Image (cartoon, rainbow, N blue to C red; front, side, top):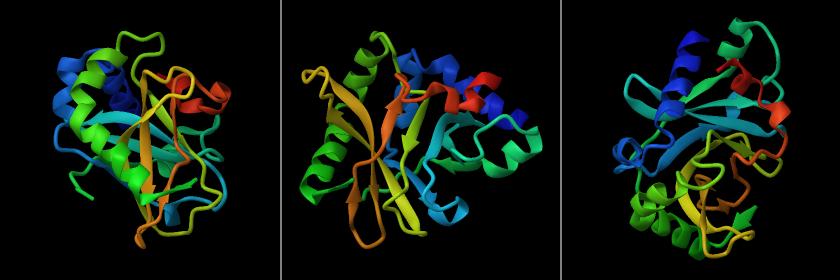
Length: 187
């Protein structure tokens, strides 16, 4: 668990510094989440981290992200390094627009987001109700924030192996239910 906490602390130390974040995101398009590793129908928490200079996410089921022995937490956290793959159900057109927005605007977006009240995300909430037990590509994206339409919000667009796109992910903070993110209390 110490390795996980260190990786999350590494992310925390750079999440307000665009000059350090830009190289981490450069040429990265997202991560792969294997739903077979997690209980069905329970949301996932994806915690941003930097492990041995590699940017990625520790993913854990909400059912396991609770006060429990460190070895249990550690056994249920799965490291998903970010990859440079180029490739709610949303249309392919909308998904590709969001992904393209990320690829073309992430540097400018990072410079702006760190000045906002909640800053850069610490974690993503990933509902799994409609997801099958297979691997999904979680692709970095930007979407218009419904609260402040002039601002774009961090997004992950999930893509199944058969090419279906899902829009279910919420970047946090602000938190939906902060008390459900036990691992954050360990930092």
